[in-house]
Image (cartoon, rainbow, N blue to C red; front, side, top):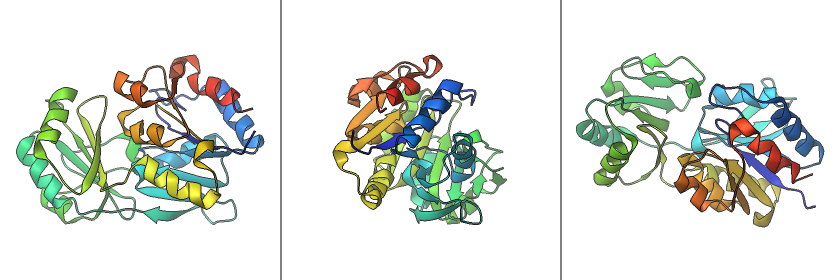
Length: 263
């Protein structure tokens, strides 16, 4: 079997929605690494929140993609912190923020800045940030340089939120709407797939030897990009539609099932 580049989403794929990693999943990830394949994390989490997962599965060297493609890490045990940021994509969020606040006045906003800090309005906090968000004014958010913009509205359904975003006709950004009224915004063309493809070229892996497993709307581009794109069993219908195959749910060890086929 050719050496593969195996790209794994975190939440809903490696861990369940309570953050629990099943022992069989951890064991199969280690088996795939020991078989000589490249295992990469590909997540919407900021790098602060990704590093505990990387360490938990014993991934000490290689690469990973965080912030939906906005940040790429190189892992090396010889580095002082065990990792370094090798790529970071940024954008000016001011016009997007203005448009979204006008359209969805009850929305909460958070920005991941170039230093990996999170700036937020209205005590907005999420586990994916990995650090405590710093409360700032809306005007301070507009002045920041963003890697990732997160928008959340408790007063809208997912469909209402998606429709509102479409109606804005925003340019120069990439976005995905989550399970709830949750929006992730990145710079134009920045996705998990764009970050992974840059690393694929560094690793000298053929497109046909890429494997990606995920379950969310922010995984769509990654599943389309991969030579073998696998959707988790609990993924929304729209995500399953773009995948080459569908495995079991995260609670049924769907990731472990896929990884065994690589051994």
